[in-house]
Amino acid sequence: MANDIAIHVDHLSKLYKLYDKPSDRLKESLGLTRKKCYREHYALTDVSFDIGKGETVGIIGTNGAGKSTILKIITGVLNPTSGEAVVDGRISALLELGAGFNMEYTGIENVYLNGTMMGFSEEEIDARLEDILSFADIGEFAYQPVKMYSSGMFVRLAFAVAINIDPEILIVDEALSVGDVFFQAKCYRKFEEFKQQGRTILFVSHDLGSITKYCDRAILLNQGRNIFEGSPKEAVDIYKKVLVHQYHPDEGGNDAGETACGPKEAGGQESSGDWKDSVVVNPQLIEYGEKAAEITDYAILDENGLITNTLMKGTEFSVKMKVTFHEEIKEPIYAFTIKNLQGIEITGTNTMYEKADVQGKKAGESQEITFTQMLNLQGGEYLISLGCTGYRNGEFTVYHRLYDVCSLTVISDRNTVGYYDMNSKVTLL
Image 1: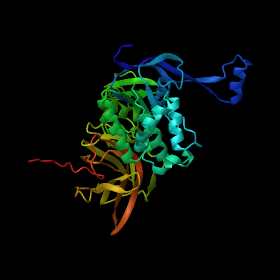
Image 2: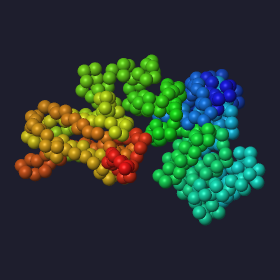
Image 3: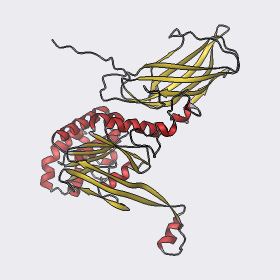
Image 4: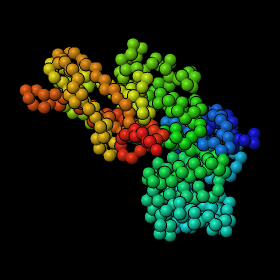
């Protein structure tokens, strides 16, 4: 392995045997049957990559893509079925919340326990204890059994131990997702400090904004295979196609999905099926209304007209829906809103507010409606709701509403205060 390589992963595969019944596992272990009693599942298949010393690399992919498995193999928690992972440098890993912690021990006692497991003497841990407790910032709880901790306090202490023992390589698996925003900011400042010191960081995250902002490179895993390795932005673009099943494995990395599936443009000539088939739809959406007019299709489109649930902040995007009329309606009103995960309506509009020239429709007709705007929301997770309403004999009538019909992930490498970015321009004289 070259001197400038911190982690070398060479044709790594991991096979799991899946048994339908515990008795099948027992029969095989005792040699009582020659029949194969299991199904083979490859969590990883022939994965290879190198991570240079001083690089910050993110691994992204859907649930079950093999992200955590590969980190466990790199750190020695799991053995590969074939291939190898070679590491050059002292590793500090935070793979699972509280892994290696004794729930009956106090926070202080667990610091010493984990430090000893990492190969430090008591004197070396003494020298680092103040920095660890200061970073964790859990106050007097450091002297209480960790079984009393909230998940936030737990991850604070675990991360503080992992990051303050001077590792040459830091490996983190989604641990920051349970910390509050201030703790996450502190951790990412530490990442920047590590990068400046020439240390290596490898982390798995579903926070695509953090991947884009902090990583030098990103690796995209899909169904246990490394399908792309390169710039974070390109990795995120392909990941968006994977999420809506527009990625085709026969296609090359940067072009994956467009040719194989036909450009998934809502209403395009080459598109087939419903738009919503390419959107991650909420299986527990709430709908109501008398359905004299019915929302039969919908999609979120990025600046290139591709259907996706993941958008980049600062780009143009569209919300599109199709309404089918079962009765004649003279003045329909079409609307969409965006809510945060707490259910607060952040923004939205409708064709009446926008003074759009909406024509009435007869039974059997349909209408396609597209709302196009710039995306100035802060990075994060949101929910889209759609509606078709109107006035019948002077009374407000809900024809069809779909609440929280699909999710919207906004990726940002620069967030400001609040929900919206005012795109302020700063002048210094």
